[in-house]
Image (cartoon, rainbow, N blue to C red; front, side):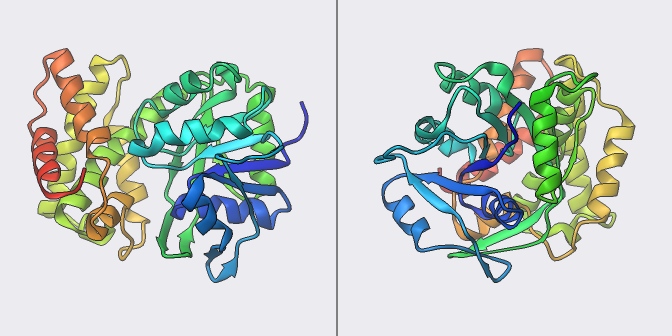
Length: 308
């Protein structure tokens, strides 16, 4: 398989900019995909940790003869995914590999369905982003730690050439990665973390440090996590106490003054991913006859107090 050289980023928020900077600094050809006014703003440039980001911009409304990407990373919020897929079509080829660093359980399926006319499903890999800490304000992006990308096919007992090509590219970009044997379990583990941590931090307007010690915020997070464990089992993905303890270890190493993306959205008056988290949990609870009162409360509160 040809080595990955051209990397397209769909979504120029904190995460998208952080990953773009890593690839650009390693000598990859990096492009953002946007359209219209957003594309024009991106051409004004971004800075990442104070350094100008060297990346081109492809305007989906007038792409010209844009070359297909070898690797495409989706880094948008759930409510923007359909538009992002339409924009991405102008720079996707049959050999493009796709990673989604989005939250939730089904962005990969939606991307694969949206790009099915061009792309084989096995080139859309499952992916989660862990322990990153990035924020964007205006044209400036700052991050303390890039975290780790965990990715692969649902099963990876013997990673294939698609997976190994991404592994080599991430290593070259100095981005930590892992390819577990059971990627579906990892996807649910991250969903469990997001449902507990992101929603608690958002509804309390609290940084990581508020949830690290014992106390009411941590208890609320744990109650939300317990509901995910029950629903995951019903979906055929057993989660254990070891999974919960693993999250506690990750949380303990997060910067106390750092903020989840969902808390940042609440503080900035932006729409949140509550439908992706609590909304999905309520629907799955109804599907399996499992009460999820804490997630129902999150849905009511955040729907009522944040923009849609």
